[in-house]
Length: 364
Ligand code: DAH
Image (cartoon, rainbow, N blue to C red; front, side, top):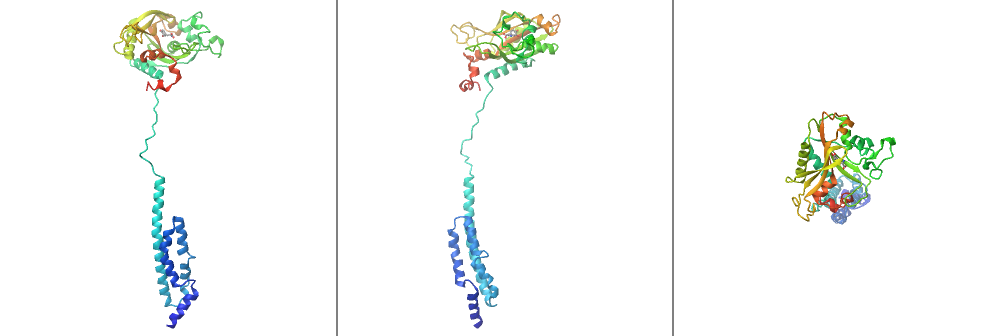
C-alpha cells in the first residue's frame, strides 16, 4: 500500500503527464487523425503523438524511475496508448494514400475517347505521278530510266543533235544561257531532254533502250499553256535493224497503256533536226472517241497532238561515235504537262505550279 502510494507520487512527480492525460491523448487520436487532410500533415501529427519528443515518449523515458511494481502497469498503459494511436494514424494514412493515388491517376488519365489525331497524307505531285506512270510503261518494255544534267553545254543541247548555230532555238530570246565556264561552251539550261540522247550514246554501246524524264527550260512568258520550266520525257532506242514500224508500234503501245486500250495513233510528217524522217504523233481523242463536234477535249478534231518522234539522224550517230551504217534507231520526246493536261482535262498549265491544294487533292 505504501509502496503503491509512493509509486503514484513518484509517477506524478517524475512524469510530465499523468495516466489520464495519456488516455486522453490515445482516445483523441482518431479524431485528430481524421482532421488532417494530407500525408504531410499526418506525418507531423505522427511525430507529435509518437515521436521522440512526444508526451508518450517522455512518459516512457520515466519508466525506469518507477518502483518495480508500477513499471508493468505504466508500461502496459503506454503500449496500449501507442497501439491505439498507431492504429488511428495507420488507418488515416491508408485513407490519405488512397486519395493521393487516385489524384495521381486522375491527373495522369488518358482520355481514350478522344479522336486520334489524324495525319493528312500527302501524295506525289501530278507531274511526278505522270512521269512515274510513263516510265513504268517503258520499263515494262525493257527500257532503262536515266536522268541528265539540267545545266548543259551547247554541244549536247544543239550541235551533237544536228542543230546548227543558225537554228532559231539557239537564239538568245528562246534559251536561258548561263554565265559559267568557257563562253565557247555555251553553258545553258537545257531546252529539252534530247541532249541525254547524245550523252547516253557517247557513254554506252548499242543496243540502247532508255527513257529520260526531267525538267527543261525556255525563255517563255507564263500563260495558260506555257511555263519557262516544264517537264519532258525523252526516249531512245538504238540497235541493228530498228525500223519506223518499231517506232510506231512502241508509241502505239504506250498510247494504249496511258490513254486506254481503244486509243489509236497517227503520225504526221514534221521536222526535228535530230531525226530523219521526223513526225508528230497524235492520239485518238479518248473523250469523244474520234471527232464529235464541240468535244471539250479535242474540240471536234478527233485527234490530240501528243509528242515528237523520228528515226535518229545519221549525223547524230556520227557525233557520238556510233557507226550509222551499223545501227538505226528511233527517238521521241513528250511534254509531261501536256500529257497530264490532256488526260485530266486541265485547261491551265499554271495549276501545276500554284500548289493550290484544291487542285492537288484531286490527284491523291
Ligand atoms: N526535243 C523536242 C522538243 O523539245 C522533242 C523531240 C522531238 C524529241 C523528236 C525527240 C524527237 O527525241 O525524236 O520539242
